[in-house]
Image 1 (spheres, rainbow, N blue to C red):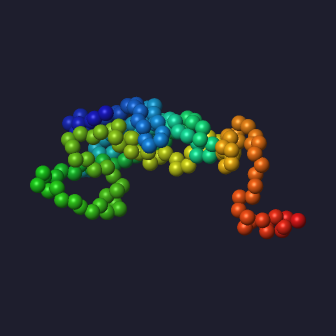
Image 2 (cartoon, rainbow, N blue to C red; image 1 turned 45 degrees about the vertical axis):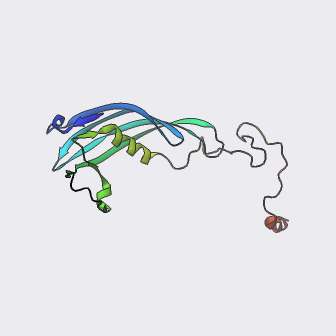
Image 3 (spheres, rainbow, N blue to C red; image 1 turned 30 degrees about the vertical axis):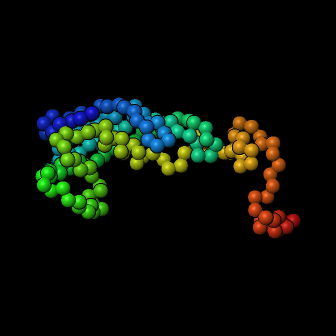
Length: 166
């Protein structure tokens, strides 16, 4: 969804969008974003609520599952006018990383929401807090069935710890 600067009034513009995309190993569906884009000083501010669903594999048992999230997004958008002659690289400060820098004559709302959703995505994916994972020997999903293989000590250096238990 592209919003051109001429479309944004002093009172702002309402934003309603939905889309989906793939990110590495997961499929993400932005079910809805409801918000407002309005001007502030020499920049713009996007404020709204996003509801998105991520379809991904569990990090312990490798089963695919869906999880829905509802989060608030608040970002500042700054217009950076550059000449074609000025294409030198500049180093960004930490303050520069707190807002979106726009080089075009429009704001791509879906791209900003996509980047924010990726940042909101959890690092570790578990289908449940009680997920038992898979057996390291036979590979059976321990959430669905009991393992039939006989487990041997993983590391012989820990054998001495069994004596402490007695």
